[in-house]
Amino acid sequence: MYWVMCRLNMKKKQKYIWLSAFVYGSLLIACTSTNVQHPQKTYEYLFLGHTYQPDAARQKIDSRVEQINFSNYNLILLGGDITEKTTLERSNLYYVDSIFDLKSSKTHWAVGNHDLSHPEHITEFTGKPLFYAFCKNNITFVVLNSQNDSCRITGQQLKLVKAVIDTIRQSSHLMLLQHKLVWLYGHPELEKMQHFANGGLGNEHWQVRPNNFHSEIPYAENSSEKRNSGNLHQRGHRHPCQQI
Image (cartoon, rainbow, N blue to C red):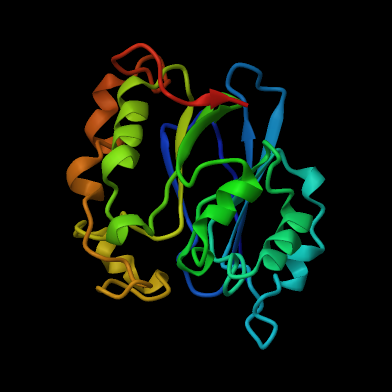
């Protein structure tokens, strides 16, 4: 499994964090953040993606993940492809739930291409939709379904993302959680990083397809003038995410 450790300093100017799991092997990122309003309090978030065993037991999660003490973390962020066919059998989901406690308010899952044999099982076992927004510890999180509509963020999902970005207030960061590296496509510099993606850029269902991330989603570079006093403080009144 591929391990990456990072530290998130809430006082830095970088406001948008993209968490994606569409990389070679499995990905683990542990981030420690300090609340700006309460600098003495820290929170630890664990991001895991592509966690299935790279051998014959592909309906099993990597044994190293099974051994993690998840109670040490304030949030568990899953980047998809939990097992090879996560929702094909309900027994797979009972197994995944026994590890991650899927209905917990601490656990959030951005689905991958290996998770969608029966997507309705995901909402049943998690109690959450396939895309949504929530707020925690002065951070706004948006969980995306990057498998929908050939990697394009459209329909109600696009409305959600735009509504959050347009109306977010008093959040130190906006974190986007998705499976595929949708932000690679269409960016002259980021496309050079396509070797990080499992299948690179292309038109197969397991690749990063042409999409509208840079053309329709107003992200950090385009909205820095709307920030106020170090917070993402933009026009509007309320953003549609729940405080958990």
